[in-house]
Length: 83
Image (cartoon, rainbow, N blue to C red; front, side):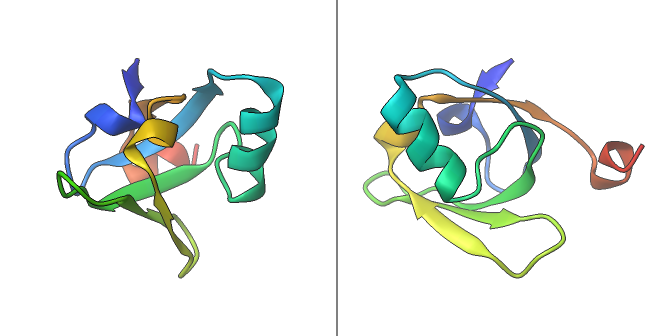
């Protein structure tokens, strides 16, 4: 299990769990980080938000490094996640 903040750019991953207080979990879910959601890490510059693109949509979202440390993920291949 990894944290979102530990992923390499270009990695496809799936949200496994949100590890934070209730308010932060609700906030993360409201911007698309629900359990099982698949995404690709598009950009991860040292001093900028991480840029995520959700699988199956054109939706992208920026997320702070701090918030990304509350999201547990596992790397997946997109065709593997369709099973």
